[in-house]
Image 1 (tube, one colour):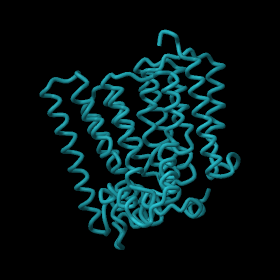
Image 2 (cartoon, rainbow, N blue to C red):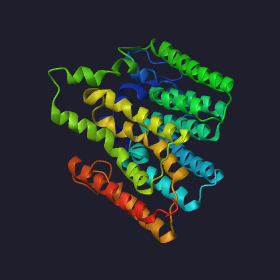
Image 3 (cartoon, rainbow, N blue to C red):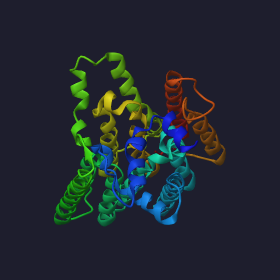
Length: 362
């Protein structure tokens, strides 16, 4: 879909009101005032815009190439990492299918190239989780910095990361203190630096200013029960397929790693929920879908399944049908309500199948 058509069709204010202005102003910073939460994410739009200026490419072309490169890099990187961890091919592919076939994880960005910032965040987030699982503190800190430059949502993952650092038992007490201090220091320092630079060409409250927006809205005269229910569904629905697969396969335990992954997922999903329906709006599903990555790791690391090629192909077809969306695909559910019912049905089917395919010893 062409750039202008996509931004209009999906009402991409993040692009038209922020990322595009930053990219087109490169190698300078924009002079006009942007909203603070968009300006704080200036790093990658600025770099992409500067590359377009040097290479003589259009902004649209640079963002499109970036989206395709990031999707390929994240998917291949995940597969290589999980293979190195000894995850069987079929369980690994099943987990990636359950995650990547969400309508919000990749498909949205194939339509809206201007939202590449989210994929830069997702790349950094992937590094963070892989490094956490691999006990590589340096890589974890680097991933946090990369993710922070894409979206400051990574702040909501810090409680889960700190839980893992202190309760996993891999590091000594002194190492735990040093890693935790480094994580908090670099996170706050990078957040302050982004805010300081963004302050030169933006105004209004930062994203942190919306942290309690849900509660302000609930106690305002504009709140309504139907809108609150809709907001809750938007925030929960992207998690349903993987959560159902986890429940059916019983791929959870109370190890520090598993609890940390759940806490990280809950923290990231809490961001669109706490920002409320007015601020988050229809972006809730896209933002909540970022919380599915830790659940995918939890699934592939713990699931013990009897998966043959026939079952894997069946899962591929099921997830393909389940990925149809009322806005993002030409065929599929006719409206948001039908899409909601399809996702709930998909979750029920996945729970049943994973329960049936679970090895008895699991």
